[in-house]
Image (tube, rainbow over all chains, first blue to last red; front, side):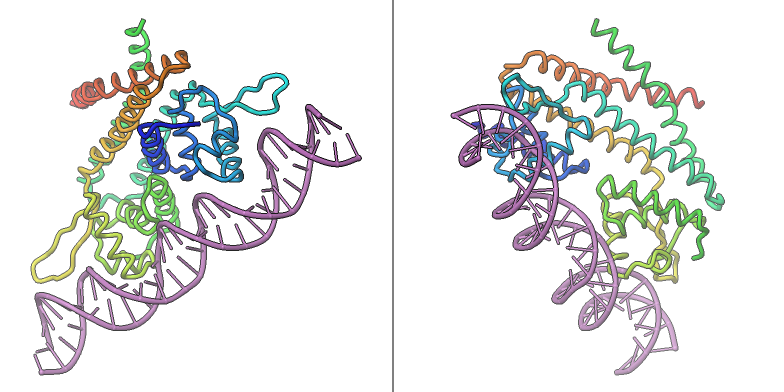
Amino acid sequence: MALSDKQRELIEEIGIYHENSGFQPAVARVMGLLLVSDKPELTFDEISETLSISKSATSNALNMLLNTGHIDYTTFSGDRKRYFRIRSSNWREMFNKKMEDLSGLNNLLKRVLEVRKRENPDYDIKLKDFIGFLDYLKQQLPELMEKWRKENE
Amino acid sequence: MALSDKQRELIEEIGIYHENSGFQPAVARVMGLLLVSDKPELTFDEISETLSISKSATSNALNMLLNTGHIDYTTFSGDRKRYFRIRSSNWREMFNKKMEDLSGLNNLLKRVLEVRKRENPDYDIKLKDFIGFLDYLKQQLPELMEKWRKENE
DNA sequence: TATTTAGTTCTGTAAATTATAAACTAATGA
DNA sequence: TCATTAGTTTATAATTTACAGAACTAAATA
């Protein structure tokens, strides 16, 4: 699989983004490749060769991405290869995960508020305030998504 | 500084949360301690001793947190020590950073859309859709924050 | 002037992470 | 039945990271 410089560059940037959100470098590059590639589906070997990563690293990356639901694959009769692709339904999940993360933070902050013996009430008020906002956001978000869905017919 | 089991536990959990968003373990624990501690402000030595981390790790962690605006410190005349504390204005910044991250993702996705030669238009439509939603969210968020501010007098 | 305080900086290293290469497996095909 | 394909597993090498420990600095105090 030949890639343009632009494509390679973008794959690296997407790779770094995903590394920063906790993926292994090779895993993050595979995500990048599957996103950027013109072909909708790629085989094990195409991925391994295009990214110059070993078979084991490729195997490991693909299995991790399969397990986390980031990719899936199709097969064709009379062809033993699997054809891997990004699960596009995954956008919403990706977004939801970010929101869950925020909600995880909020749960921690609620526990902080409980544990603190408020020798610094000013601070506690601000903390409570922020917790309130996160709760509000969580509540409003589905509504916002609905509104957007309607506006886009 | 004596800490209850509950406090220690919470510090670890907050630590793990921040580790997962890219902080070093020791840095993440310092954040946790400053959040959970009853005292609003802690000195270098209190932090180092309470968390059992070396002076170098403490120095490194505090400077990193100072540089990123997560903490600041006060001083008192005739006292050479610095008294470190969480910047509570930081809640909003923390949130904004999460949102910026999302907007960073969106910029990458926009570039993906440009680079793709749409041999898989179905996929591209979904991608475009998601990009649109993220744009919408970014635009609506300030409004939402304003609405919340009003509802909370 | 010597000592203490409040940190900082520098080196070494243990542990964790990430990836490789080579051996292996299970299915298909010649 | 022997070879090939499509991957997986295992053992290990290379890199990175995260930190401790010790030496250091600069200001304040004795």
